[in-house]
Image (cartoon, rainbow, N blue to C red; front, side, top):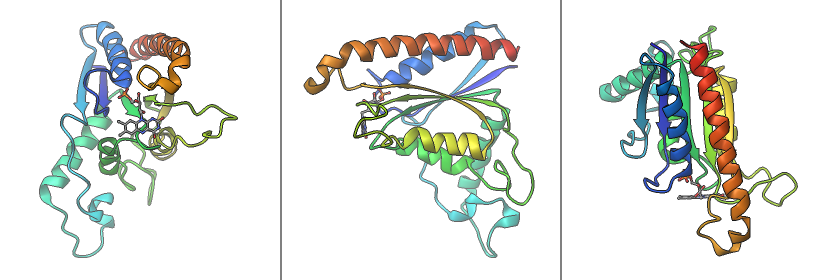
Length: 217
Ligand SMILES: Cc1cc2nc3c(=O)[nH]c(=O)nc-3n(C[C@H](O)[C@H](O)[C@H](O)COP(=O)(O)O)c2cc1C
């Protein structure tokens, strides 16, 4: 069954733009056919415990002698990795929080980015190579090329490195800027651009969901 793993990490349960955009993608995926499943993991509502033990960054054969990570954390890590490797497509809602990803999403990355298991290390272990990952990012402000804040967004690059370069996934990023235009008076004159880019992102994501769902029927 074609399965979408749908992750959200926004702490905003009412007006979140990433939640609205990932929901649109998931809706199109679900409507592609009765066999198209969506597995949802809300990393804000059901936050993972922070990564508890450095030994869990490695499979047992690569851990230092005497390492004994907590059994429940190891079980959780196995579940998270299985959930990911069983999915046909990964969808990640990733708002920009303090120029980075929300800590809830970072915790998930810490559990699943494992050399020798999901990342090549002492062998060609890259079970997710070529698998599509769709990252939906929302910035409060704007980080356009040529502005003083160009390059300050460190959320998207870390996801491109971890999911793309390391795990080998085929990453597509859809970013909407100016999430704060509605509420911050200094950005009020940019509300038109914010709305237009949000509407365009909805279209882009619906088209991408249709395409990916069709290739995984
Ligand atoms: C804790 C926190 C930190 C934030 N840090 C930034 C930031 O560094 N840069 C920025 O442009 N916007 C920042 N914002 C604004 C959010 O990126 C923006 O509101 C975005 O739309 C949030 O995604 P969401 O609408 O899916 O919740 C921050 C918001 C919160 C709640």
